[in-house]
Length: 615
Image (cartoon, rainbow, N blue to C red; front, side, top):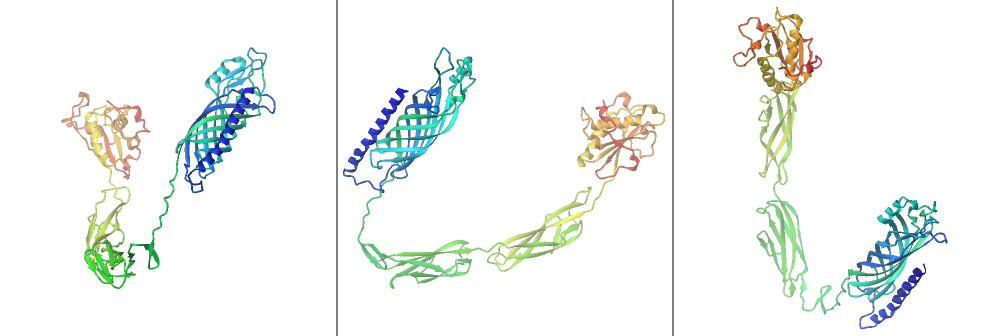
């Protein structure tokens, strides 16, 4: 502790000598041939630098000696200054690394009276600088005081050390973050215009970090540090700064002799200038209209006038700009006025020439919604456009249908062949327009063409024929289910399939062949594995009606084009074959199921999933 206060004394003495030496050096600088410093002096307003030094800490516990102290050590940091006035600036600094190891006395009795632990700390500071010498001085002492933010952290080795030594009774050491107050001073030594050496002495007042240790010794060897108290630090450092931002002083003002020119003075040898102002009666016109331009000037009576614009010229005080052959856009009319003994003067005005605008308007259909085959009357209310006075319809066109004179005819509009609801289609009708300036445009409207619902009837696609006393769907039947029904499904994805199973007289009723035939056909449509299709089970309806053959017979034989098992071959000459069948019906979306199939149910609830894909 004695060594630490001795170091404080040496550092304070060094800072005092530097400040004392700065006064005669500054006086000697100002006493030379250079003019005395003033508020108009230019100086480097910004600087950045690095510094390094030695840092000491003194911890107190409400006037009592503390148990833990920080050993002196090296510190390194960076800083930035902004000197916005001659004597006051602002500094931001960051002491990002300082090695001040912790020395703690463990609870006694213990073999060691002091335990050393690695510790680092740092500081962020922002505060004003108060200079005691002007910027022109090569040696500038300063003082500073302001808020800071201090942080103390143990090293990883210290963490491991307290964790491994059980007697310390400290599982870990914690990092401490705390506000602080910083104060001190220093001296800047100007080496070159952009390089400064610095000597700084800074004090810091902050809280005791106590490292998360217990506030008292819980056992011999245990580490502790009484909580509360404060800590004072002293950092003596040397650094180097790079400075910039100096503005050059303005050159001396040279006053030339002048002579009068009207109500002002001009340099001797210069001519008096002529002022010119140009105005037009209109600055926006349509192509073909004339613009009258006049000039206001202080030129003498013998002055000459020269007008120019788009190849046109004139020599009077007034000028007429003919825009007949001028393209649309801005045109600058320029006047140059000259006179002996005067500097020529110029003036201009810009005239915007507008081309004929595009005609537009509103096209209306009455009525705006019609049934297919009806007609609608067209009417037009138009705007001729810029620079035009009239507009007319030169013809009509329609995306569908036709227009004769001003009447739209919907007869040729194409609507879907059938649907579950009313059909509606928007047809765009366009009128071609032309104004008296020759510009063209269009106007359009939309007519809705409608048709009432046109449902489709159910379709008896075919009858699948089965071998006697068999419920297996042969290859001919699979062709009907997998190929012919696909065409219907592609055209109407939400339609349904109705399968009605039959048996012939003489077949064994106890086998329930009518039901099995319908279910096997449904499995071919819905199993979605192997060759089977992937119809939704809710779209497949099944029904079995035994020997009832009252419905239409529509047998389908494929014996000449499909190879079958011997047991599944069906001979068209078999007069009873057409009764061993499953009727296959396609029921379009929105079409009612035929009355003959009132008792049908969907294949899913009938248990078709248990069948799988029939072989």
